[in-house]
Length: 369
Ligand code: NAD
Ligand code: IPM
Ligand code: MN
Image 1: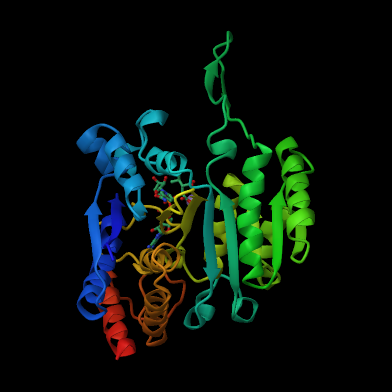
Image 2 (image 1 turned 30 degrees about the vertical axis):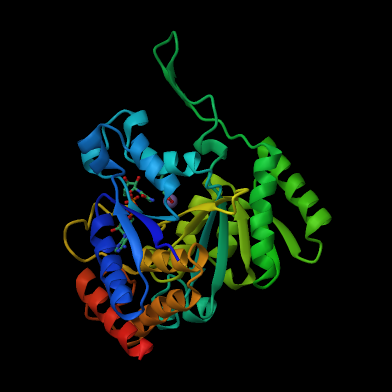
């Protein structure tokens, strides 16, 4: 069969550093697992601004659309922080999500057993934790118009954004959450602020209608987003699938990351609709950013990027066995005691990005026999 077409967009900061470890694993797979990928590399973010004057060129969009899957690193950094809003590196990922209609961002927050002691919470509260956050990613306040900063007659400025959701946007992401719940522990917690926001009221109503009409077998719970944050930080194991809009989903997933031992551990998959051709656009990225505070030091944790690659293998290429191998290899390396600097655990020797990557490949080698 034709080679699987993969577009890699390392981006800025630690993006290229952790992507290097994906390349290492990919090389191992091609040598030892008889798979081959047709890999292209492209520009996005600040590096693209420097080279092409835009955070995401039409060429990058076209290549992303043509690929079977996109593996994204991270974008942004102090070098580009003073650029006008419309030119910032972050627009690179936003444009890709919008152009490829990647509306459902799947963010698993799983505690690997060796890291239960590294959680921001007590080990007994997080041991075995396995949450799936489903975040809407093409709508809401991230894209709503009008938005801007205006200056009034008095010379004072007003900044504004628009939170806006069409019912079809809510319904399609809700279906993704319910479908996932059926394959998991059959529960969806939908979060909004229906008590203060009109769009939140609609969100709750539409999720309820979809539930009643199509997913009555799944347990649905509605929860205010602020309460959800508190519940996540105190009794996280009550959750199975959490469904939220673009902004609440973003915030709650970083919170969930702290439960797993580090932001450097969590991957994500952003999926589009299944098209008539059967193709479904998909982009995979860690939930962390470009980490400017540690970029260039060779100490970033490559796990989130590698686990994003594993999700890509699972969801886009149907390579469940290879995906599971990578996840197991990472868990075993953690079991052996190796820790990158970000893991919130004292009394451990720290290793850098490459040592971590090499150890993961060694475990892969053992696992694959
Ligand atoms: P960040 O996620 O980059 O970093 C937050 C903290 O976590 C930092 O202390 C960082 O060192 C640490 N960290 C993150 N990933 C790590 C890893 N793999 N290994 C070790 N430590 C890690 O968030 P930020 O500092 O708020 O943002 C930095 C830049 O990244 C900003 O320009 C922001 O807009 C951008 N950003 C991009 C993405 C993305 O590309 N998808 C996501 C979030 C933030
Ligand atoms: C993420 C990031 C992005 C977001 C930024 C960089 C636009 O925080 O992927 O979580 O807010 O969606
Ligand atoms: Mn984020």
